[in-house]
Length: 252
Ligand SMILES: [Zn+2]
Ligand SMILES: [Zn+2]
Image (cartoon, rainbow, N blue to C red; front, side):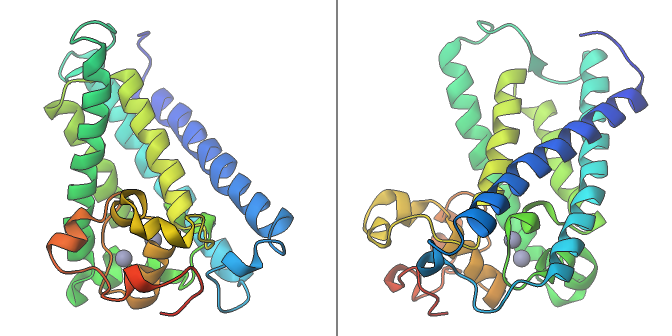
């Protein structure tokens, strides 16, 4: 990898992070709210009309978060250049199977990290300055997916900094995990339930977090802290007791 200055990487990664946000969140908004909104009205999770002011706030916080994520990314690349991380580039260094296993491991680790920090963010003493911004939209839209207050963005960004020192990861695995995180966050903040109602009878709807699952978190606060999987919510009793009985129409 060619060596550039720390600030060069910051700028480059800021542009990429922001482009990724506008492309994925903006694309989902365009598709679900502007093009298909009326035909998907029966799958909408929104009870009130959308507020353009809360969308603007979400976008502002997301731009701020992109600055933090870019700095974290630039730090990871700088440390990689100095040979201090466990990131690698040779596809066969640990075997091709390891690319898949390490990708799943990152998702499980991130889900666990997120569950516990997210639960901590909801403690009354720190909620206001750590997590209030993300809950600015009571009814999330794709624009809410990266809307974090500065301290929350730092804590979220630190996960990938930490993991690049702890778990050997190919750059492709890291990139795939970052794209998965972005797409998943847009999906869980979509405001439309995409899973069919019958999905809760199968593992996909029972164990994966979808749009309705996370919408319940935005309206009730005290349940559903997970990111990708419902595992921790089920194990630690923070799953809404009616969740698996509910259909996509809002009953919460
Ligand atoms: Zn959320
Ligand atoms: Zn929350």
